[in-house]
Image 1 (cartoon, rainbow, N blue to C red):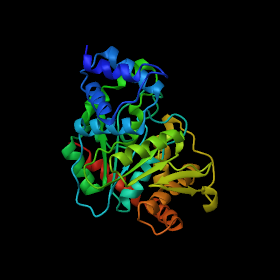
Image 2: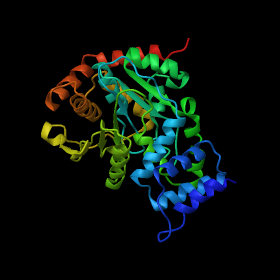
Image 3: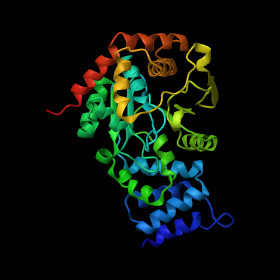
Image 4: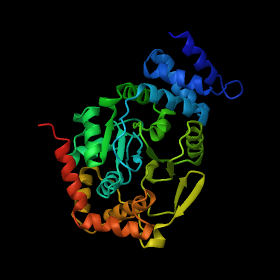
Length: 342
């Protein structure tokens, strides 16, 4: 048992009236001890539940991110003249609506905007389909590459993926605890705002509940991160919804975007896991569907938001052209080749 960790656990787990928030340094220490499993399994499980009940603060999230930065693997900067977009997605995946993230990433990369994603395998509590499985279904095998190879693919093809079981196993080892406690721990928020890139980056992260976004903003501010975007997206992802007005945070500003105003209103495309890869490939083939409309809407928004297109209308037109011309499919073919280890 770790006496040092016990004192940190006692601080967050003493209940509503006597419990206290951790300082940034204490949160970093606690996270380091958890990731390195210097605390016992009982202490780690107790901390995850106690901290969830207490609710994390932005200061604590900043300390947790400090620990992730100290222990996690990061890609070195690549030679590009624009920020690398860190397109985040909840590690526990999607279970209701078809994800657009992979299509968006391919559209951006095709247009010359570098994108880096990250995640792991099926993760509690949702156990939804994770990004890595979608990429595997599309024939892109990030899980086979080391960080040097990921860096090379990102440099040459403008798209990369940091796979936790291979590239950050200390964080991946927390999956067992998440399964046993049966609740999302505060680390689920850290995963959304962490960047596995050491160069100039633009972090885009989704959220569901407004208090979560407030904590994200505070953590970014404490860490001096100014180039970030928060998105009230589908299932906590960065996917811009079509069935409601999108609420997007850009620095201290609020951006309100309605798909209805641009002729793209509609329902989210339902997720059928056994059909998802075929549905995505149909988008790349230009087949008319609600999913391709979601892909064009998301691609158009991010082409504009990331500075490729001068306005949203132009972004939508460019996203549609890139998809229908086959250029996005060609980018996918390039990635298949680049990630194949013969």
